[in-house]
Image 1 (cartoon, rainbow, N blue to C red):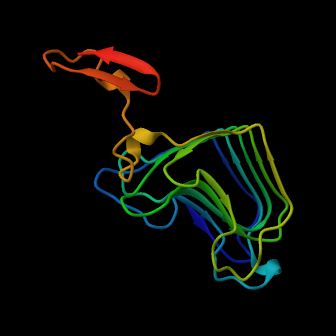
Image 2 (cartoon, helix red, strand yellow):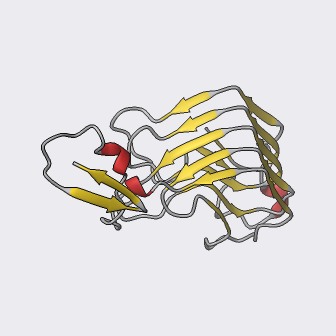
Length: 175
């Protein structure tokens, strides 16, 4: 889903299940509200709501779930997860810019990198008027290709014949 320009107003995405197709990667966003190159606030999308949606990257290769550069944006009660790509920091939600107001409330967000990020891009309109409340953010280390020490002991508990004893994060597993 992508919407840009001052005529991209008054959209409500509700109850959608959006998942990455097999063998498809995306360096942008699965849901893109606005354009990072827009330099006039009045030309950004206005009155956009994302409500009770499931937005998920089911395999590595997709950089972010939602990109925002707009006005009167309300993102609430969503599941936005699975965003990871080798060699690149990823976000579940990236507020690139826009005058706001932007409300991000009661979402589950999971990505490798900055789970949520505001700013950090070269945009022509700085992000403004953000309300960020009651969100759950997760960056699981099992997806981190730069941290080989991250080891989920739950993955080996049922494994036999390893002939080892492993201690990780205070949990000892005898193999």
